[in-house]
Amino acid sequence: MLIEKQQIIIDNVKKYIFDNLTLSQFTDEALEEKAEELVRQQINSEYCPIESIVSMVEQVYSSIRGLGLLDSIIVDDSITEVMINGHENIFIEKDGKLIRLDKKFESQQRLEDVIQRIVGLAGREVNQANPIVDTRLPDGSRVNVVLPPISLCGPILTVRKFSKTPMTIEKLIQYGSITKEIAEKLEVLVKAKYNIFISGGTGSGKTTFLNALSNFIPKDERIITIEDSAELQIKGIDNLVALETRNANTSGAGQITIRDLIKSSLRMRPERIVVGEVRGCEALDMLQAMNTGHDGSLSTGHANSTSDMLSRLETMVLQGAEGLPLDAIRQQIASAVDIIIHLSRLRDHSRRTMAITEVLDYEGGKIQLNPLYTFEEDEKSSLEKVSGALGRTENKMKNIYKLQLAGYRKEI
Image 1: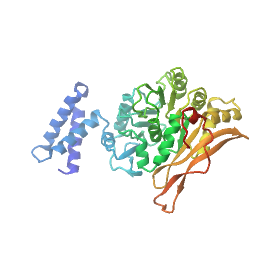
Image 2: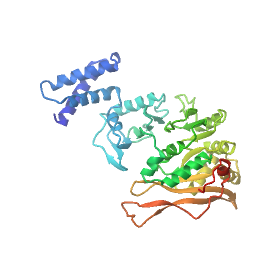
Image 3: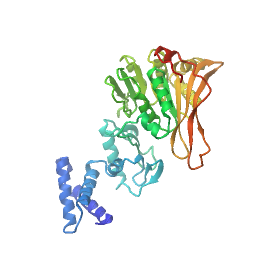
């Protein structure tokens, strides 16, 4: 049966259900059975493979009780991101490239229904009074919603797909992001409780890298993770507490911020605190936590380079404590952050580790940096394809106190 004919059948069945049935009286199972009965009636005596019937029933059911068009996109593991700009414009990211889909939602109202269903699943609210929300799907995929009148082209829905298999260091090695030798050095740094910041631009793989790095944490420690929407997949740690922020309700009350969660986590006897992303005034609390005995903490932040990450941290701290002198802030950053790993998404859409840098003391009005590894392109590089590797600089690592304390004698 032709795809066009299948689509007509699906539309006819959906129209009949919406026009003639009271959906609240149907259980999920009963609705699915009714959809199958109506699809078979529409086919009549025409030949149709069983898989096509199943597909049509799934599409009818999904458009009523599921996430409609989004369901079929989300099950495709090769799609990493979905961008819906109003009900007619749908873009996906596949193999690092943006592609426009030739599909669309039936109407703006249908897209808004799907958005309300997604937000409701996570116990959050989105409406005209609160038109921007960050949430997640049941499988952990990260979701951002922006509604009109803030958005001028209709409801905006952006979904960052969640990998079903946790990212491991082995996979990062396989993808060429780091080498086995560097992975071993990073394992030592995590186990020796160095405070590590992962910086990079949007889509550079910060959360993915943090996930991989967090699996080096010894399994007998108490870990507290703090995120806007839970994405981290830390496996094998029994004493793990995962915390997630909460938006304000329609009356403007009940908001729980990352800053609130960091403050609360300090009373929960953590051995390490892992913050999914620092992006505002909570940076001050994060730095203070790192400076008050919570070594081995991990976090990420948006920045274009290692030095830019330090400037961004300064700005974020100032958002939460305007009266603090810049010297005091820089001193705090220098004593709290030990290592910055900078990631980037290159011109061929590959994600690479660009630098691993040691943060030294604050001297002469500047935080001193000691680059340990930097990415260098080789002669095989071209405009279309980047070739190169992360190479060791001639600089020796200077802050080896934590290594010695943990009983490590190897060079980093």
